[in-house]
Length: 119
Image 1 (cartoon, rainbow, N blue to C red):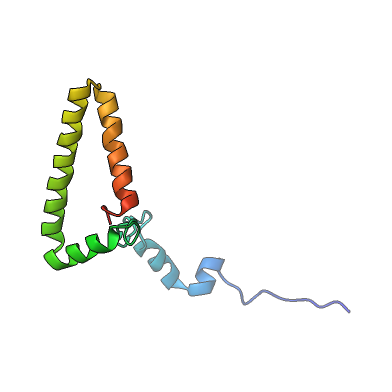
Image 2 (tube, rainbow, N blue to C red):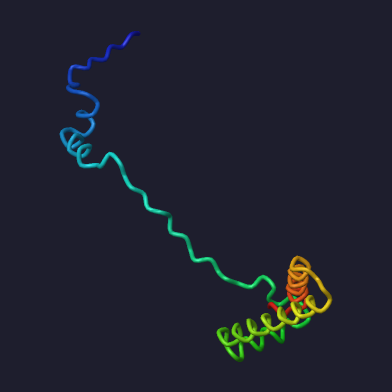
């Protein structure tokens, strides 16, 4: 029960038999090197992770919503700068060095986060 298959109707290579003459034209029209741009990422949301945490957080959020973010951030910056000056003057009066002063400023920031001032 042997079956023989004749390939007499097959002419040319696989490339020309599959798509004919169009294949070679298509292959020439496709560039060899394709540039791929950077992937487009969505802009990250700048959301405060401390929002809603701490005793003073609700007051801070309401105040920010009432006076607007721009004005609120200006006031917050002034308050932080004033507090840093107070810490610096305190360190000068007790004779603390710059490293200790920096540690106190970091501690003040952590306490502000816990209390909700940075909400």
